[in-house]
Amino acid sequence: MLTIKILDENSNTRFVEHGENEVSLVNTSGYTRGDSIAVEIGKQKGFYHVQLDESLGESLVYLTDDLHFEIPFEEKRISYPPAAFSDFRHLLTVRRATKEEIGQYRNLAINVNDQHGDTHCYPHATANVETRGESVFAARNAIDGIVANHSHGEWPYQSWGINCRDDAEFKLDFGRTVEIDKIVIYERADFPHDNWWKQITIEYSDGEVCKYDMTKTDEGQIIEIKKKQVEWLVLKELIKSDEPSPFPALSQIKVFGRDIEPLGNDFSEK
Image (cartoon, rainbow, N blue to C red; front, side, top):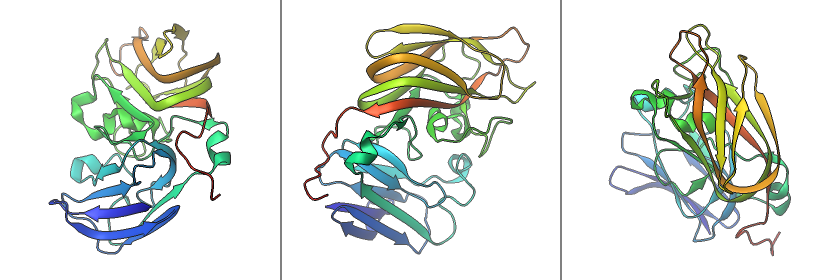
């Protein structure tokens, strides 16, 4: 059984819908401060298409438990599309993914539903620094699928900002073992405000650590790698160029590959 709930600040249920393999909920009253969304999967961890707001679209994610999403307000909202979680009508959907969808070659890094904390929803991005703690510089911005990088600040130019830290690190956790063979890095390119990284290091969960040379560009920089199975990767030792700006940043990371097995999805009724 799948369930979507809209909860108020006291965890009281405002709206609820249930379904077996898919469920839709229409919120017709808008959101108030303290509201949250709960996606309950009945302990059936696995792959789901999740849409928490129609302006965000859906992501194919791996849920290890129930998903809890805090509705953003004020400063936290400006890293989302202006229509997100505003006004008075919203469509939320959840659907169990099929075996064919899970097994396809795709960008395994995208998750428009990512937030701080343990949301049980993967992929999940974290970092040891986010500029001034502002939402427009949060790690989650680098896996929301948006590659616009000619400016910085509110949507659609949100990015992962490192607050000028030389020891900045970004971790992408897949929540399970995946097989990958290509990484695409979009550095923020708001030149001359921005600097850029001339070299990055990626540490993989299998123990391999590799350095990659980068160039000054607004385009995605492709890193082809030998197929490997990993649970996570970390971007670190980010060496900026000699240009005067102290502000390099990451607009987006894409990681292409496949899932290895269904991991919990029961296809007996498909």
